[in-house]
Image (cartoon, rainbow over all chains, first blue to last red; front, top):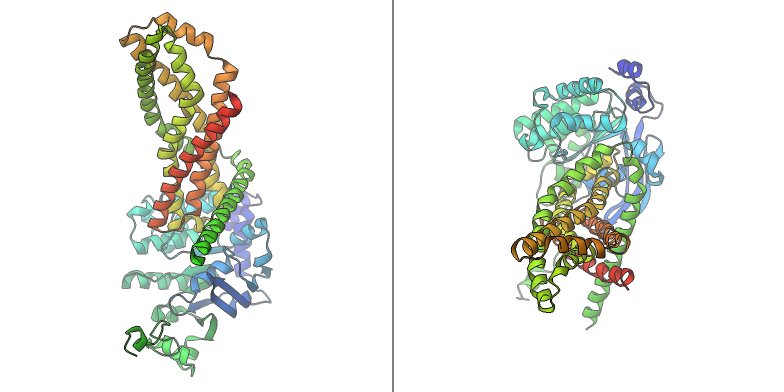
Length: 293
Length: 258
């Protein structure tokens, strides 16, 4: 597929696909693709991250978990530099993303795919055109070659027969699979998944779980999955980070966390309603609220 | 008392922050317009959506406005025996004022609100974020073509409005009320000046097109990504655009026509 791309259209932009593919299959001395150090971020005077350090290893599926409102999605937006941190550094493939200029940032983004929680398909384009969109925007490939690539991406996610449907005609699970096909259109080095299992029926969830793992291994990708679906995420995770209170409270493999002495890890992995993450939201004493003190 | 002052200060700061964001956005849009040159199909699509689909309301409104002007104008002029000047009155009123202003108000209500809603909903459904992560600048790809389409469409729609309005005035004045056919057109031709009247009307419609479309795309892009946020943004587009058009009309009229 990529030999055809290089032979038929050897322009600069087509090299993006080839370069991405080579990046993903070449052995690299430095196995850490994303390095986050001392990350601090606040929103409306509330500290979301207060000194977060984490590493995302190449070729692995890294899962970021934590209670709702911890800032898991915000972390993905920081890595993709849709927002900027207050302090700290975020290195992606050796480039410090917080200081990239517009042109270099967009060059980096061509090498990163992202699957949004609701798919975020372009509603005025068909399934086919949604997947072809990044290819048409960033390459000068012929329509014939684009068609071949799109069909192959749809085949990978099992939706080749849905190419002519519009996003409004798709189920939630199908939307996410189409969005996944779009995210791999330019053969990125890394894909970030924002809550891919939320709201899915068991069959769709199983399909997505299998797709994330298989695509990661088959294409030599690096996957970052933000989720609070413990069972599904743990089944595909090579490494897990638990976030809470603006910090990494535990990290390790699934087995490490299951056997961890950390109360945070135990509360989250076992779904306990109370613990280091309290059940009650911060409030004044109950008696004084009822005016009986 | 202190709370009131704090609230006032907060609102003031918010206003200037929005004004600043709006100016940054228009500079970004203008800077990125050159990227549309190799992709004229993007502009053509938006010209159809923003301009062509607004034609019906513009033409119908223009015709009715012209007819009303024919009626009212005749009623006033006939007292002075000057009903033969009906054509001049209708044409000058439309070309100088009503054409650009009423078209801009209708454009803000129909196309402006649609632009704001579309962009706001794209933001709410993360389509704009998805474009950013696909390394496609949504300002250049989404806002730029829409802004340019609005800017190009406005003077064309205003011209249609004025032309159809003149026909409406002719239909009522000549067809129904008996004003002389030749007098209607000949006096219009003698009195309507290309530079003082028509060009000034075109300049007004260009300014209104710039401002209305700018407000529409900014409100959509800056909307809070919820259904209520998009609804409020759409309302703001219509209200702010209308006020801007009326205010600018006064300033431009004072400058152009002393």
